[in-house]
Image (cartoon, rainbow, N blue to C red):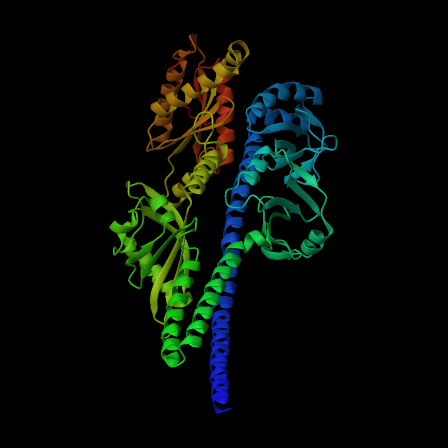
Length: 618
């Protein structure tokens, strides 16, 4: 009996020991795994939110490009003047249409992705048409329109046409939505099971068809209820049923329209669930080994539990590091100490910058910065933000291994110990080279004429006003505007074609740039109209000399496509402040002077002032 009691007690003690180990292991495992799982889910949501924002910016850049093209179309001066003459009753609608249709058709046909277009008068009269446009828009700006017959989605862009302060018409352009669909379908930021769509506040949903086209789609009731309370500018993440999550970002270029990214929960949280599974399996294996060891070896149980606790702590630390998205992340990541000395880099960092782990480990991260920015001032700004907020985000230029400059959108997060001291810095950055290049292309498109690479009308007006303001501030009265209109250019287009005419315009732009100083403002207002702004002492006499030099240069024959072309030019001069006090008035006065030169037979220089310097051309 005694032996039985001893055996029973021994079994009871061993059973209690095993149960205690199992309970302790389960508590420790869950206490470690669950917070890690929650943290990883949050990290995955943040990472995908960054990807959604980048996708939304890409869509916005495309739409802003269409909006800029529409505004450029409204600046064609000769056609606009005919439209203004129609408004004033000087010509009939038929005359305005006959003059405008072929010229606008030629301009519209060169616009990328353009399917249809209309120029309307102030009362909605059709002046010119390209393609087969749908009904007129309900409001100006950008909008998505659906063709009633085919269901095809177009991007509609409309802009008012101004003659001085008067609205004389409207240009409406309809762009093919294929480029927008391509932006959505070709995104490499998301899993193939992810759906990208556009949602407008009027409960209209646009989704990609099986053929990759953007098409209107019925709005599911659960999605309508989910998005029904969105306010303009809202962005975030919502749960769609039990199986999906919806990220939404407002499209700035489209009123009350959002980019939707619908990700299945299994895809969004799949890495976290997979990692949790491995953590739990590892914990269960270790718990079983510990229980088995305790069963066979009761005496050293305390020592073994102590060693296992230490092993579990070490294993947990390693699992937390392994569970992070460091190595598998598509974003470049760097871990540094509190002095920004590099401790570890991931493969994405090597792919983006070309630096291998060995050569850069131990170096200060600021040593890899490009000379485009001052490392001292930049690091001071970063440290000031980290001391206050523990997170800094901004644009940084790096010097890659091949010495090229790399723009990056970087996030730096501080890791602190129990004493609130920074012990590690986590650097995450994305290559934004394509975004930078796109910005530069859009900037050039917005400020320069695409055919001649000279400044466009809007930029010319802005820079003339700036020059006038500087002249006023420094009490200088030495500005002259030269307005050049090509003679016989219409004959070139009519006889040799617009392609030859375009080459002639390019050659004219080159001769103008070679004739004046590099610092002089040279621009194209549209059609065959050019301007030059001079800012020198004795502007009146110098302007006549330069004007005659320009006319002489443009009277020389042009050699284009085996044709010797003779055109010539009429040039008008207006002075600030003698003739006008602002850019638009100065251009108008120079334009009038140019018409005086044309009335004299062309190939000459004329001024608006009463005291003109005689021209030596005629």
